[in-house]
Image 1 (cartoon, rainbow, N blue to C red):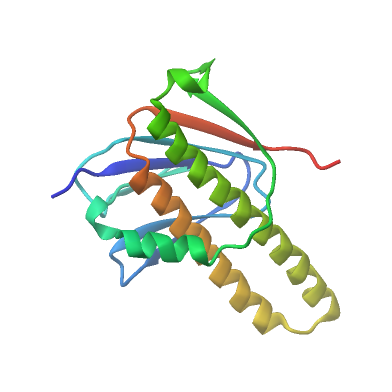
Image 2: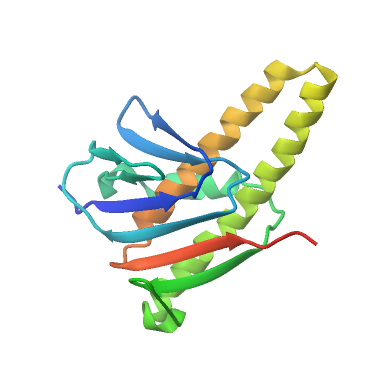
Length: 183
């Protein structure tokens, strides 16, 4: 069995959704669009692909690396939107904030940056979805369409989180992302 990696996401007081994809073979994490802060840690995990541990504000997901293929990864990224949201990004070692160069080599940092750019796009897409959902509910029409679109977008965000944890194979990388306040 291939090595497994844990993926931790903390969303403060915001709600996290969890779901199961592909006939129960993958554990998926879904993040509500209006989360103002979350962080992920990529590190080597245990060898139980179905184990999931839930705490108050974080979910630890473990699964095998063999569940993902490059083709599937390309598909996930192709369906995302193109608008960009802005995030403040800090890197930490334990509780201490450090320069990003202290956390990993250039190749690893390039990987992380690439996935964070995709996260920007997903966040912008979710933001547009929230506006669409509020408008539909206020007009009391199109609710079924809204729910369908919402679940589709959540699924895309789920795929992104799993791709990040699978392909950024670096131990003890902790990235905290805070959404910048809109002016």
